[in-house]
Image 1: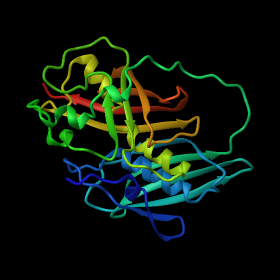
Image 2: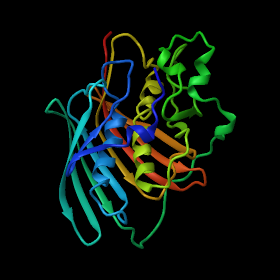
Image 3: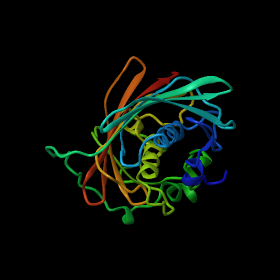
Image 4: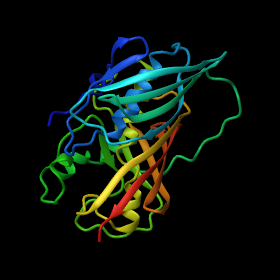
Length: 282
């Protein structure tokens, strides 16, 4: 499977006003990666907004599984353009059927009070192996997908939830360094889209570690239900970002993941929350 380039995935065609087409990427399972829908929806909405209004939030709902072999059509509804804020509704469809919807908000920065979450103590990314290299020459029984490079490079500070064995842990945090491996253009919207793509890759991993569950165990069902992001500061997705994740609650066959994203200097650049479906057949 070829390594997708983020710039290619985020380069949307525009066949008509407020209508965009996004290409997809090969996936080991016949279900499109949710992070791609998140990223392309921000890209589509951003193409309809003035450049002086960076994205500051997104709230998305995964309606049904999307096909990774088919193009995705994004329709943008220009809900509002105010004095400093723009709001957009984005609907993604395949074959005329809605698969995903998002509300995306853009706003010029303003002065105000400031504080942020504490930057966690962590191992530097240069001291860690990329995830695909950890398994490249290993006989650990993980899918080949994890042994190949991908559009976002991941370096786990903590052990990933893969065998053998996966022991229950009481750790409240799960730290992962991430970045786009290729240099990206100086376009703030593109970097926000790249972070949205990356934010869906590891956010639910803490629940597997807490309960000692192998992410690839037979009979396990995992799916993203919704996803929210808030962008607090400018960022570069092609430089190391630290994803500080936890899972405060699991109930009703659903789990909630939370994440704070920091840049290397310690700035809290984004916050993420996602609820996912998690069922395990015993």
